[in-house]
Length: 254
Length: 229
Image 1 (cartoon, rainbow over the protein chains, first blue to last red):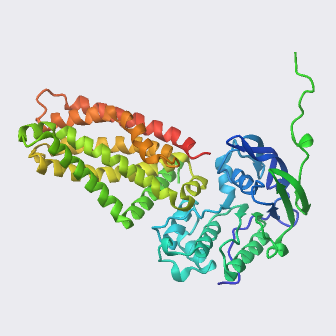
Image 2: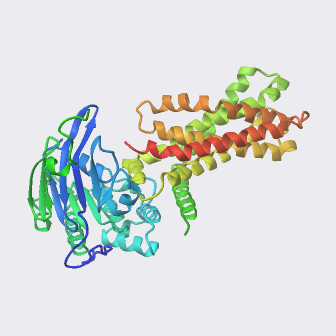
């Protein structure tokens, strides 16, 4: 596995003047009437690596899926790089890469074909070379011609990580990135986090176990039962709903 | 690259990916063909050994077999997207929903075209119909029918792909909408096989063209909503 991984740079210099990478205001999502998120207001600064912590059912995956535009919020708003998800979903998708629990790979295609397909849809320049480089970066060059159907869960996760390397996302969302990975695979995630940090890419990591990733983290968000229980570190703050929401009239107009 | 050319190239990439996956899982394509053949044979048995009766019924049997096999084919193309969250990933790429619909529909069209040509040949052999005498109008009818089935099927396969009762719901939703296509295609095939004695072939083909245009436009405009949760 190479020592340096190529990541498209997003940083604009030492004094980052970019808008916050993620701003959510009173974000809520109901599933069959039950709230998975119940009013989350957050502000994540650009270029930071932030852990999203919390027990099962806290709303980590739901929050990530909303920010990735995979699902719509029931209430509230979310912005990525200053763009409203509801109004500019197409533009947001150009800026966000999402590694979910499911890898989104095609079983009957080879590893190379899966990445080549992704590169086409991501409009990756110099497609062939970038695919080969990504395969090398994730340590799957020798299995590039094998069908994904025969891959282990860890290899599939590596390949899904390789797909992220083909785009030029300014925000990377990783949902349990260490799950199913062996020690080498976890090392790959660490290398990627370092590369993204150097390139000014914002990374949100949802995980139960972040001990191994601790040296790479700038801040932490703790979710509990669909609300923000705590934020700590740099680059992240929870905006009180009273400040984040637009002013409402105290008395209904007559 | 202009927007429309980029969309066309993305649609072709999606269709190519579907074709590749479908060819690798060859059993599905072969079983769809066998299904169409079995439908033809069963209808043939139901009508009895009267060759004139079979020849008269051939256009209807051809299109019933194609429509039933088409339900399986478009369902199969969307099932490819259920591999480990592939449909959600496809929706997260920065591409228009129109390009995704077009890609899936092109894949469906190619499958239906191959099915149509094979089943047309099988009808000629099984029901002693002279397909060669009216080959061009029959092929035009098959092409227009394939476009319509793919356009409708792609949309409804998108509706049902995440449902538990997918296998039941897809034909329930798709078949009533295909009724005008079935009518036009059967009438056009009958007219073509009879040498178009009343000059009605053109009118039925126009009906098919209108059906195709409406369904493609409606499908492309609304498919994106199916990808949202």
